[in-house]
Image (cartoon, rainbow, N blue to C red):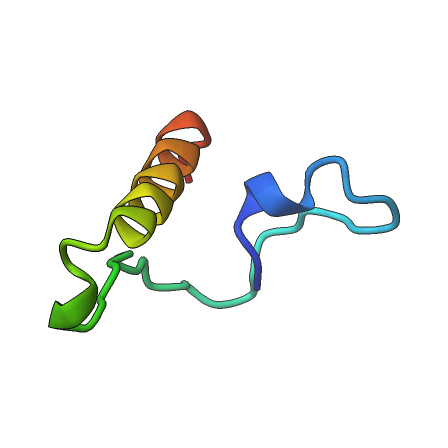
Length: 57
């Protein structure tokens, strides 16, 4: 099971309804406290958030 947006445009894959109800999910990011203020880690987290905002599930 993959999100439909990942399958669209992927050659050789089809989008079909699953035979059973599939529960939704919650997406979160977790990191160790020591990385909370790290500039590179903050940048990476922001890149992830931005990329997910651009492509809704």
